[in-house]
Length: 74
Image (tube, rainbow, N blue to C red; front, side, top):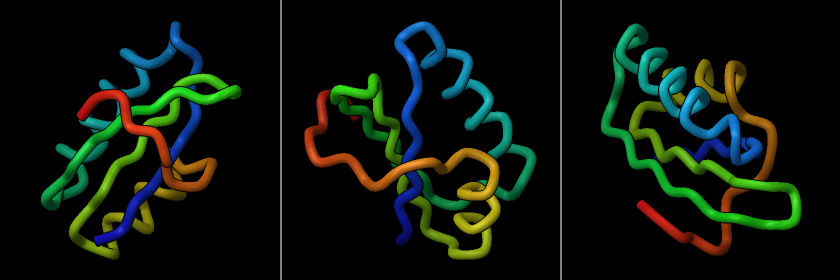
């Protein structure tokens, strides 16, 4: 399992999560788990993927930070 994380603003979370789901559907989505957290930079979306090859491509497309430490929703 690999975790890919990205920070987004509150106003961008719905569009970002929609884009992530669409990308996963189009690129052979493995087992996926989404979590969100907040910090000083905004909302942190952490996505745990079961397939390393998909996780690599997903990280190139969406990843921009380290995994979340304070989960507020799953």
